[in-house]
Image (cartoon, rainbow, N blue to C red; front, side):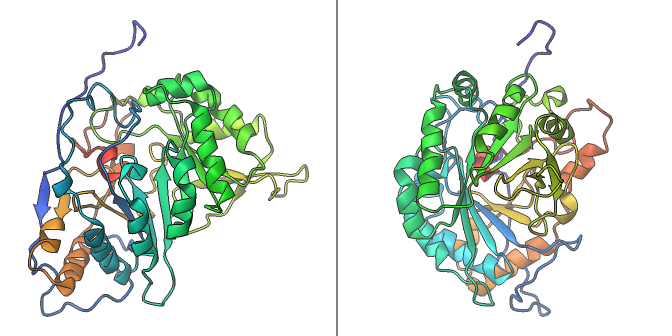
Length: 388
């Protein structure tokens, strides 16, 4: 920290148990209907993507997610009995699929720390949409355990992985993960995943100005032409413990400016409705997309809010349903699953919750004057608890 930098204040809020009870009768009034495969919230946003956190533990201590000052050896992680078991997760996921979810992403913490995660993947891979189509099953990981698990994950039915990697320089990477983990081992995990067909692989780099922004070009050079899609993510004010400051955010526009000084790039259309990344393809001299060279993406969650078409719900490892990455409260589905609620009641509760959704945190934050801070959401749940 420089002498001119303001002190970091890390508030110690624990929102894991601050949830909204969901009565079993929610959404089961006389006008309730069976799931139709299409559900909209108050802003007309469909439910298409479910992110499931399977653990609140991680073996990294990245400052923007699980700073060591908070998540130390005495941090009270959730007891095993509080976590949803695989059958409970699959039961909840089944009802989300009936409501239109087409993609399930497993997150954490670090999801590969969850024992026998392959069993859950196999259960989820067996689900089908109302039209009989398989789901897109993917997983986000820091890559530390990927080399040894890639083959088993693929065999269980996992289709793709997204790997978090914040730089190629080993000293920078070790500094950012704060547990002295070598970048070579993550690269080995990526190679193993690619070898068994877990793809297309995406690599996410969180860019912090003054910390790892000098790694933008080396990362782009390394992954260009490999079939791996590199995405640069603006440093976000997720949770309440990472000491977020706006002056450490490098806007995606600046990232693209740096890339275009080195590479020919051409904008690409979004691959899917609700996609968070803006896509840029490496271009040939005549301005056409060079598909062999591939593409990069930027996720501008701070400077260009994409709340208007966000179609993602998040299920915590203990069964709390969150409607926004920046939420301060979840809806308690675990009580329904472990109580007397049948599948119709569970489906009705999900419908009731999503139809009442109005969250648009990033849009509200973007309307504040510069350097106001992040008072919009007040206390927010940690990303390590509900996944990115």
